[in-house]
Length: 354
Image 1: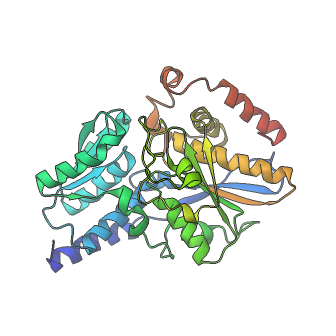
Image 2: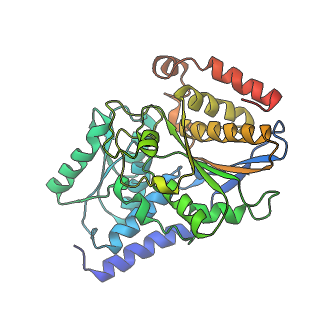
């Protein structure tokens, strides 16, 4: 336990000063003329200093751990991560002068490993994604460090009532739009923390917006949502990096979710590639998961003659995945044939239907 108030005060000041230097992320309205009276927006989380949605989480986790006395001036920080959270936590660990070790699956994108090292962290590899938890605990005990454990603390480290969290930011940025109160917010689950924040905020602020959570293949979240079985596990992890889990994570809160869908991996990757033609830049495959779900909802609204808005997230840049989701050979060997989904999206451009 850290009781050095001078260090605690200075550490929190440094993190808050970093936050003050960072502008809010952009809300991008997509140009989709095939949708009449339905607007689709991307909250662009790739513009954070560490390039992803996980920058918010890492900042909250550090503030939470410091305030709880779990981190002191010489505490090694250990985290289990598929990459983006580790990149962001390495950034904040360097800001505080603390050593950082990321326990990551060996299949993690090379660019993310390079970024962890760029911010002064180390990558500790395990073969399977379900091995990250026990190995992180072992390392924390061995090194007398702190296991940050994003999968447990993500839903409680962020102030979901407001205070410029991601949900608060979305609704403030929507105020002058044609449909300022979104019909849907669409989010994918990694830890489940962001969907918990958004769902709680919607209810607390008395909005009528619904939350749709879109899960990739090889993830237990959707089945848990349907069955309530917390013991669900899978032998294989998600192929959409950063989202989906082989076990039910403590931060996943099903009660704040109005609807869940499973998005095929080919649809996630194909939609991320299709988005480049709309946006002019690459996004990661988890953004494709989000957007495909948002487009499904938009098409269903259009069929019912409804008008409104849908907000989802651009989670990170596709530049991190040039050797995977934007590599045709890798996609053919690991994801499958994108051609049918790309044809479906081309038809959507013409007809407004998927």
